[in-house]
Length: 488
Ligand SMILES: Cc1cc2nc3c(=O)[nH]c(=O)nc-3n(C[C@H](O)[C@H](O)[C@H](O)COP(=O)(O)OP(=O)(O)OC[C@H]3O[C@@H](n4cnc5c(N)ncnc54)[C@H](O)[C@@H]3O)c2cc1C
Image 1 (cartoon, rainbow, N blue to C red):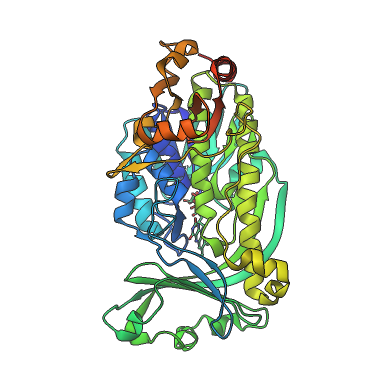
Image 2 (cartoon, rainbow, N blue to C red):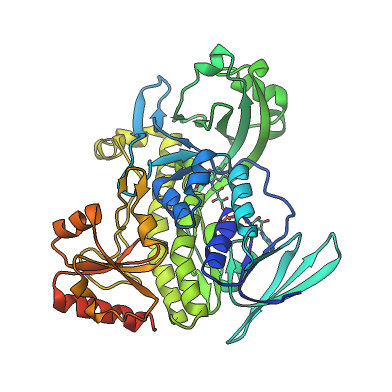
C-alpha cells in the first residue's frame, strides 16, 4: 500500500473533497483521511454564490452542480413583525460579471456525494475513511500523520510533503498550528429543521420562493426555500427555553403551525447548533496548512461558511503544486494567509452584524445603518497583499464573459495566463516555460483590455489578476516579477 503522498488532506467534507479534486487534477498524489465512513448527514449549507460556481467550473464541475442546484432569483428578505422589509439582498437570474448567477441553492449531502464521486475517479487520489487522525508531526521535509480506525482496530501511518487540515470546526490540525483566534462576538443557539414538503398542497405552494429572515427581539427565525421539495427553518433557542420540551416533535409542529401543517411535510433532519463567528489567526506552520471551517467559522445568516472554504481551495491548490514541484517557495504560504484572512473576515463581520440585527432590528433605526444596509450585497474585497505585482488591477477578480453559452474561463483554464493584446508583448515570456501560458485576447477579453488602456495582464489560476502592464516596459517588469516569485 502506498504510504507517501505529495499531499494529505484531513477531512473529506466539501472543502477537503474539492481540494482533493483540484490537487489530483494538477498531477499531485493525494490521500484523504476522514474519521467517518459516510457523508455528514445533518443540515448544513444550502447556498453558494457566483464565485463558488466559477471555482467549480475550474475543475469542470459547474454543469453537473447546476443540475442539482436552483438559481436564487428572489434573494433574501429581512422583515420585522409586520412583515415590512427592513433589508434585502436582491436575487436575480441574470448572469453577473463572474459569468454565473449570483445565488444558488442546493442540498449539501448531494453536493458532497458528487464531489466525492469525482475525486474518486482520479488515479492520483486515494481515501482512507473511518480513520481518525490523532497525531501530526513534521520535520524539514515531511509531515507524518498517525490515524486510527476504531472499526478495524488498526493504525495507519502516512507521510506527505504538505498536509492540509480540512477537518472542520474542531480541527486537530489547527491545534498543531496555534490556538489564537479572533472572535467577532456572535454566539447564538439555533435549532435547524430541514423539512421535506409536499408541493401538491396549496399552503406549501403559498410559501415564499425566497429566504425570509424574521428579525425579532424575542425569537428570530429564518425560513429558506431550498427547492420545490425541501425547506428549512432556523429558530433561535432562548436562554429561558426548556430545550427538552422545545425539541419534542409536538412542540416543533406547534411552532411551525404558523406556516405549515404536519400533513404537508416531514422533518427530514434537525439539529441544535451554536452559531459562532471565529477566525484562526495562523493558517499554516511550515508544511501544515488549514482550509475551510478549520480556519474560519461564520454564522450561517448569509450562507457563506462553505463558500469561504471553497475560496480557500482555489487560492491554495496552485500554490501546493508550486511547492511540491519546487517552483514556489513555501514562504508563499504567508501570502495564502495574507490574501484569505482579510477576505473571509469581511464576510464573517457582515454575517455577525446581520445576526445581531436579526435579534435586535432597532440597530437599523440608526439612520446611517438603515441607509447602507437597506439594499446590501456580499462584500467583494480586493486582495491588497499577497502574490501580486503591485498595480491598480492586481488583487481584483478578472471578469468572465459568456457568449453563446461559452464561458471565457474555459479558454484560460486553471493556469497562469499572460493575456495580451498583441503577440509582440510575449517577447519576454519564455516559450518553453509551461508555467505562464501565452494567449492573445480576442472578442470580449480584448475589449476589456482595450478599455483599461493596458497592453496585457497576468491572470492567476484562481482568476485573481496578478498584475497588468500599460506599455512594453511594464510588460518586462511584470513578467520578471512573476518569474522572481514563480521559478521556472
Ligand atoms: C445550519 C448551518 C447552515 C449553513 N449554511 C451554509 C450555507 O448556506 N452556505 C455556506 O456556504 N455554508 C453554510 N454553512 C457552513 C458549511 O456547512 C460549512 O462551512 C462547511 O460544511 C465546512 O466544510 P469543511 O469541509 O471545511 O468542514 P466539514 O464539512 O465540517 O468537514 C470536516 C470533515 O473532517 C472530518 N474530520 C474532523 N476531524 C477529523 C480527524 N481528526 N480525523 C479525520 N477526519 C476528521 C469530519 O468527519 C468531516 O468529514 C452552514 C452551516 C450550518 C451549521
